[in-house]
Amino acid sequence: METKTILHILRNPSGFSYDQIMDARLAACDLIEKYEKEATNKPKKYLLFLMNFYEANGGMLDFIDVFNSIEECKNHAKATTFEWFQIVDRDTLLIVAENYCDSLV
Image (cartoon, rainbow, N blue to C red):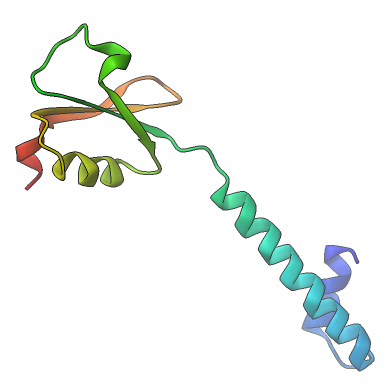
């Protein structure tokens, strides 16, 4: 069933049979599930690097994980014993945050 038809039936159910309305509701649920799944399958955006001291040459050896938000990165860094963190935007490869982990209290 096309999205326009689903919306039309759900917005104006009079004149449609019970089965048509139920089919439109089920199709709408399927669309919602599809969109939710697509939204949650987005690649994570922020790379977290942790180190015991700032070392410009640490590179990928300091890489910990990828997160959906800067706040998630900071929460993870806060829960560790590392001294320094850097958060890098996966798309631009720019450092978006860096500081001492104990500054995240």
